[in-house]
Image: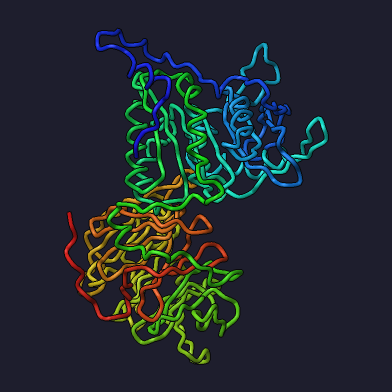
Length: 579
């Protein structure tokens, strides 16, 4: 996208003769929109200290709430949040642009990072939370704003008695920050685009301090989110042990553009200062709020895997809520989704759920539902009539199972006990054999479409193991093969249920959503799920082109341009991968 020009700089350069001396770097001056103008109503700043956080315990911070003269309760106002307190003369900019109706009426919240104050400041140092709160990935800071700070803001009243009411729609909210505060602003919108859809990022620290260098990669792999973002940086920004700000911001911009986001930028020659940001803030805000109240929309990515998978207009739809889904999902040979952990048999959810029996289940080639009965440590098989259920193997408990077309069953124990195997092989006659040990936390398990390979997730790391299956069903050539992305909150992928499509791509339920891997073991795409984290995944529907995901107590479905590979079906040879 074409960069937003800086008007003063453009005029200076266009008017200067060819022999003129170039202006000194970072010589940006705010324009008239950033200074008090005669006759423009001035808003009020309500200041208070906030020290009631449970998410960042012990912290104290300063908050300033800007309320424009034009705000008239009870109508909720739009919202502008800025980290590091008041900067760029933002209240004056808001006064001027709101007065000219170039921005909607909005309340500004300017918040400083938390400090844990020392009991004896003469001999003890405060703990400064800025990098912790701002530089890290994950939803902690977003939850702090949404669950703690903004509700506190809505308890405030102006000096003339107007109570503060904020819009709770992400389309009515912008968030901004400088340096590490810019990362915090982007992270809040990234984690909660339903709550913030507009971002102003100045000299953003998208480098390796606490993981923000991962953002360009994640942006390229994730299904696009409804976020509009304006980036600013200068060619003389910092270049230190953790990275190069100038290059990192351009890399971020290219990733956003690749993934179809509405992104604009102002590149200059400044250093790690707020000078250019202060000079362009009015134009950046006008661009961020253009066409409001029209919603910010998702873009169209150039990610080949996502383009091949996603069907325009198809999104996650809730199927069932409130089930006890500790075990997982299973689709029968007709594509009906069973809820094997539901306490009530015969439940159908939205026409897609067949009999629900209890325990972690997968179907076998005989049409029976095989499931782990954890309370009794045994593997059961259930036909259509519950009275025909039978015990397949005793003294078996675990996290996941898969039943191959030849009737062999693989069960992952997930046990930390070194005396117990991580993977059991249970043959059709009930004979049980330990076939692997040494995985930190063996969770999900599935088969390649040709059933020559067994995949076992290690939910305690970022790895999924690949095994070659020998003719007798035992395993060989164990390899840490699939490399997953991890959530900062988990320090691991938290991979659980898995399934494959007929092209041999692997779908993994993780703490970040559904990670989609090619045959070579690389995450090509990430499908976020509405509840944030997924615990199981399977293909179902009449054509096995619907992906089901369990997320806590909620099940969602989504039709994709892919067809599931069912382990109970006859093996099929997928196409060779691109290496």
